[in-house]
Length: 215
Ligand code: IMP
Ligand code: MG
Image (cartoon, rainbow, N blue to C red; front, side, top):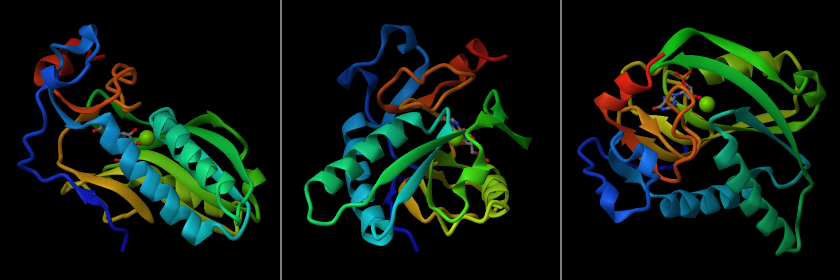
Protein backbone atom coordinates (compact mmCIF):
# COMPACT_ATOMS: atom_id res chain seq x y z
CA UNK A 1 0.00 0.00 0.00
CA UNK A 2 1.18 3.48 -0.87
CA UNK A 3 2.24 5.63 2.05
CA UNK A 4 1.06 9.21 2.25
CA UNK A 5 1.01 12.25 4.48
CA UNK A 6 -2.35 12.35 6.22
CA UNK A 7 -4.15 15.66 6.75
CA UNK A 8 -6.63 14.91 9.56
CA UNK A 9 -10.34 15.76 9.40
CA UNK A 10 -9.96 18.15 12.34
CA UNK A 11 -6.84 19.80 10.84
CA UNK A 12 -7.24 23.49 11.55
CA UNK A 13 -4.95 24.60 8.74
CA UNK A 14 -3.20 27.97 8.71
CA UNK A 15 -4.54 31.51 8.77
CA UNK A 16 -4.48 33.16 5.33
CA UNK A 17 -2.71 36.19 6.81
CA UNK A 18 0.41 34.13 7.48
CA UNK A 19 0.97 33.52 3.74
CA UNK A 20 0.95 35.45 0.47
CA UNK A 21 -2.48 35.07 -1.09
CA UNK A 22 -3.51 36.97 -4.25
CA UNK A 23 -5.71 39.94 -3.30
CA UNK A 24 -8.47 38.79 -5.66
CA UNK A 25 -8.97 35.57 -3.65
CA UNK A 26 -8.62 36.96 -0.12
CA UNK A 27 -12.34 36.69 0.69
CA UNK A 28 -12.89 33.35 -1.00
CA UNK A 29 -10.82 31.02 1.17
CA UNK A 30 -11.19 29.53 4.65
CA UNK A 31 -7.70 28.29 5.47
CA UNK A 32 -4.43 27.28 3.91
CA UNK A 33 -4.43 23.52 4.31
CA UNK A 34 -1.22 22.56 2.48
CA UNK A 35 1.38 25.33 2.05
CA UNK A 36 3.33 25.33 -1.22
CA UNK A 37 6.60 24.43 0.49
CA UNK A 38 5.15 21.25 1.96
CA UNK A 39 3.76 20.27 -1.45
CA UNK A 40 7.27 20.64 -2.90
CA UNK A 41 8.94 18.63 -0.12
CA UNK A 42 6.50 15.76 -0.45
CA UNK A 43 6.81 15.85 -4.26
CA UNK A 44 10.58 15.52 -4.01
CA UNK A 45 10.16 12.28 -2.09
CA UNK A 46 7.51 10.95 -4.50
CA UNK A 47 10.01 11.49 -7.34
CA UNK A 48 12.56 9.37 -5.49
CA UNK A 49 10.05 6.57 -4.81
CA UNK A 50 8.89 6.54 -8.43
CA UNK A 51 12.43 6.39 -9.84
CA UNK A 52 13.28 3.58 -7.45
CA UNK A 53 10.36 1.50 -8.79
CA UNK A 54 10.15 2.55 -12.45
CA UNK A 55 13.68 3.76 -13.11
CA UNK A 56 14.82 0.72 -15.11
CA UNK A 57 13.25 1.88 -18.39
CA UNK A 58 12.14 4.87 -20.41
CA UNK A 59 9.14 6.51 -18.65
CA UNK A 60 6.31 8.30 -20.42
CA UNK A 61 4.79 10.75 -17.96
CA UNK A 62 1.14 11.40 -18.84
CA UNK A 63 -0.23 14.65 -17.42
CA UNK A 64 -3.96 14.77 -16.72
CA UNK A 65 -4.94 18.34 -17.60
CA UNK A 66 -5.72 20.84 -16.44
CA UNK A 67 -5.54 20.22 -12.69
CA UNK A 68 -2.38 18.12 -12.86
CA UNK A 69 -0.13 20.63 -14.61
CA UNK A 70 1.61 22.18 -11.57
CA UNK A 71 2.23 18.87 -9.86
CA UNK A 72 3.37 17.37 -13.18
CA UNK A 73 5.89 20.17 -13.80
CA UNK A 74 7.31 20.07 -10.27
CA UNK A 75 7.41 16.26 -10.06
CA UNK A 76 9.26 16.09 -13.38
CA UNK A 77 11.75 18.71 -12.22
CA UNK A 78 12.59 16.51 -9.23
CA UNK A 79 12.84 13.40 -11.42
CA UNK A 80 15.15 15.37 -13.76
CA UNK A 81 17.30 16.38 -10.80
CA UNK A 82 17.66 12.72 -9.80
CA UNK A 83 18.50 11.79 -13.40
CA UNK A 84 21.23 14.38 -13.71
CA UNK A 85 22.84 13.73 -10.34
CA UNK A 86 23.21 9.96 -10.21
CA UNK A 87 25.03 7.20 -12.09
CA UNK A 88 21.76 5.68 -13.24
CA UNK A 89 19.29 7.69 -15.33
CA UNK A 90 16.26 7.03 -17.53
CA UNK A 91 14.86 8.96 -20.48
CA UNK A 92 11.63 10.72 -19.67
CA UNK A 93 9.12 11.84 -22.28
CA UNK A 94 5.82 13.62 -21.76
CA UNK A 95 2.26 13.26 -23.01
CA UNK A 96 -0.89 15.16 -22.16
CA UNK A 97 -4.53 14.25 -21.90
CA UNK A 98 -7.45 16.46 -20.99
CA UNK A 99 -10.46 15.18 -19.06
CA UNK A 100 -13.43 16.90 -17.51
CA UNK A 101 -15.74 15.50 -14.85
CA UNK A 102 -16.61 18.42 -12.58
CA UNK A 103 -19.23 21.17 -12.60
CA UNK A 104 -19.23 23.60 -9.65
CA UNK A 105 -18.10 21.50 -6.66
CA UNK A 106 -19.73 18.24 -7.78
CA UNK A 107 -18.29 15.32 -9.69
CA UNK A 108 -20.62 14.59 -12.63
CA UNK A 109 -21.30 11.03 -13.69
CA UNK A 110 -19.65 11.38 -17.05
CA UNK A 111 -15.89 11.55 -17.39
CA UNK A 112 -15.06 13.09 -20.75
CA UNK A 113 -11.73 12.94 -22.53
CA UNK A 114 -11.76 16.27 -24.35
CA UNK A 115 -8.37 16.34 -26.00
CA UNK A 116 -4.70 15.67 -25.79
CA UNK A 117 -2.23 13.24 -27.29
CA UNK A 118 -3.21 9.99 -29.02
CA UNK A 119 -3.23 7.29 -26.34
CA UNK A 120 -2.28 4.71 -28.99
CA UNK A 121 1.29 6.10 -28.86
CA UNK A 122 1.59 4.48 -25.43
CA UNK A 123 1.64 0.89 -26.69
CA UNK A 124 4.51 -1.04 -25.08
CA UNK A 125 5.57 1.93 -22.90
CA UNK A 126 6.03 2.35 -19.15
CA UNK A 127 3.45 5.01 -18.37
CA UNK A 128 3.23 7.18 -15.27
CA UNK A 129 -0.15 8.92 -15.03
CA UNK A 130 0.12 12.19 -13.08
CA UNK A 131 -3.12 13.45 -11.51
CA UNK A 132 -3.99 16.23 -9.06
CA UNK A 133 -6.69 14.61 -6.94
CA UNK A 134 -8.63 11.35 -6.71
CA UNK A 135 -12.08 11.70 -5.20
CA UNK A 136 -14.60 9.04 -6.32
CA UNK A 137 -11.87 7.41 -8.40
CA UNK A 138 -14.09 7.46 -11.47
CA UNK A 139 -11.84 9.67 -13.58
CA UNK A 140 -8.83 7.46 -13.00
CA UNK A 141 -10.72 4.22 -13.49
CA UNK A 142 -12.09 5.51 -16.80
CA UNK A 143 -8.67 6.63 -17.90
CA UNK A 144 -7.06 3.33 -16.90
CA UNK A 145 -9.60 1.33 -18.84
CA UNK A 146 -9.11 3.53 -21.94
CA UNK A 147 -5.38 3.15 -21.60
CA UNK A 148 -5.48 -0.63 -21.22
CA UNK A 149 -6.99 -0.82 -24.73
CA UNK A 150 -3.70 0.63 -26.00
CA UNK A 151 -1.59 -2.09 -24.37
CA UNK A 152 1.09 -0.16 -22.49
CA UNK A 153 3.79 -2.33 -20.88
CA UNK A 154 3.26 -0.90 -17.41
CA UNK A 155 0.98 1.77 -15.94
CA UNK A 156 1.49 3.47 -12.57
CA UNK A 157 -0.57 6.32 -11.18
CA UNK A 158 0.65 9.11 -8.94
CA UNK A 159 -1.87 11.51 -7.44
CA UNK A 160 -0.85 14.46 -5.31
CA UNK A 161 -4.06 14.18 -3.27
CA UNK A 162 -6.59 11.51 -2.38
CA UNK A 163 -9.82 12.61 -0.70
CA UNK A 164 -11.20 10.63 2.27
CA UNK A 165 -14.81 10.35 1.22
CA UNK A 166 -17.71 7.89 1.40
CA UNK A 167 -18.14 8.57 -2.33
CA UNK A 168 -14.89 6.75 -3.08
CA UNK A 169 -15.11 3.66 -5.27
CA UNK A 170 -12.20 2.20 -3.34
CA UNK A 171 -9.68 2.96 -6.09
CA UNK A 172 -6.20 3.92 -4.74
CA UNK A 173 -3.29 5.24 -6.84
CA UNK A 174 0.17 3.62 -6.69
CA UNK A 175 1.73 6.78 -5.23
CA UNK A 176 -0.06 9.35 -3.07
CA UNK A 177 1.19 12.70 -1.81
CA UNK A 178 -1.44 13.55 0.80
CA UNK A 179 -4.72 12.10 2.01
CA UNK A 180 -7.10 15.01 2.60
CA UNK A 181 -10.46 15.63 4.33
CA UNK A 182 -13.72 15.63 2.37
CA UNK A 183 -13.76 19.35 1.52
CA UNK A 184 -13.49 21.22 -1.76
CA UNK A 185 -9.86 22.21 -2.26
CA UNK A 186 -8.37 24.77 -4.62
CA UNK A 187 -4.93 26.10 -5.51
CA UNK A 188 -1.75 24.66 -7.01
CA UNK A 189 -3.73 24.15 -10.27
CA UNK A 190 -6.82 22.70 -8.59
CA UNK A 191 -9.74 24.85 -9.69
CA UNK A 192 -13.32 25.77 -8.97
CA UNK A 193 -14.89 26.48 -12.38
CA UNK A 194 -11.42 27.45 -13.69
CA UNK A 195 -10.62 29.91 -10.86
CA UNK A 196 -7.88 29.46 -8.23
CA UNK A 197 -5.32 27.72 -10.44
CA UNK A 198 -3.29 30.92 -9.92
CA UNK A 199 -2.92 30.32 -6.17
CA UNK A 200 0.24 28.62 -4.85
CA UNK A 201 -1.07 26.97 -1.70
CA UNK A 202 -3.79 24.35 -1.41
CA UNK A 203 -6.71 25.98 0.41
CA UNK A 204 -10.28 25.23 1.47
CA UNK A 205 -12.86 27.19 -0.51
CA UNK A 206 -15.54 28.95 1.54
CA UNK A 207 -19.28 28.71 0.82
CA UNK A 208 -19.53 32.34 -0.27
CA UNK A 209 -16.99 31.70 -3.03
CA UNK A 210 -18.91 28.62 -4.21
CA UNK A 211 -21.85 30.95 -4.90
CA UNK A 212 -19.70 33.74 -6.33
CA UNK A 213 -18.01 31.57 -8.98
CA UNK A 214 -20.95 29.25 -9.68
CA UNK A 215 -21.84 28.56 -13.33
P1 IMP B 1 -13.04 11.68 -9.33
O1 IMP B 1 -13.33 11.20 -10.73
O2 IMP B 1 -14.30 11.81 -8.51
O3 IMP B 1 -11.99 10.86 -8.64
O4 IMP B 1 -12.56 13.16 -9.42
C1 IMP B 1 -11.36 13.48 -9.89
C2 IMP B 1 -11.34 14.84 -10.56
O5 IMP B 1 -12.27 15.75 -10.02
C3 IMP B 1 -10.00 15.44 -10.30
O6 IMP B 1 -9.13 15.15 -11.36
C4 IMP B 1 -10.28 16.91 -10.19
O7 IMP B 1 -10.17 17.50 -11.45
C5 IMP B 1 -11.70 17.01 -9.72
N1 IMP B 1 -11.78 17.24 -8.25
C6 IMP B 1 -12.14 16.36 -7.28
N2 IMP B 1 -12.12 16.93 -6.06
C7 IMP B 1 -11.70 18.20 -6.24
C8 IMP B 1 -11.43 19.30 -5.33
O8 IMP B 1 -11.58 19.23 -4.09
N3 IMP B 1 -11.01 20.44 -5.91
C9 IMP B 1 -10.81 20.58 -7.25
N4 IMP B 1 -11.04 19.58 -8.12
C10 IMP B 1 -11.48 18.40 -7.63
MG1 MG C 1 -7.72 16.18 -12.27
